[in-house]
Length: 78
Image 1: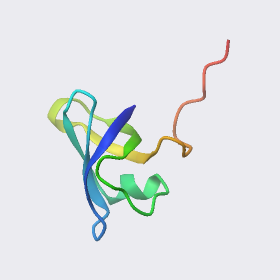
Image 2: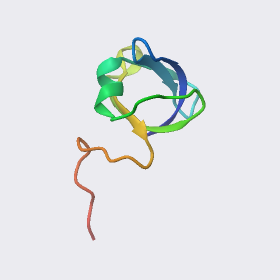
Image 3: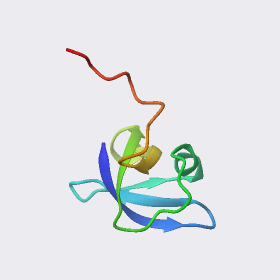
Image 4: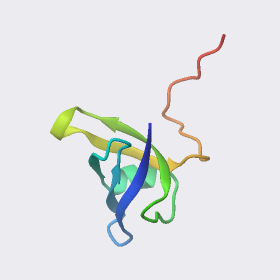
């Protein structure tokens, strides 16, 4: 899933992203660390994985579009 970085605190490594419909979803240091990033700037397009639904939805992985996601399912083949 794609999103846009909205907030980021380099001291705590936590922040939030905006989904394409404008919904803000928070992420913690664990999600940031899982993505292999060193910094995240508001406005950057990112790739995320989420868990939960509605108010309980949270980001569990955040990285740049060009970085791999080792936890993603295997790509479908024809």
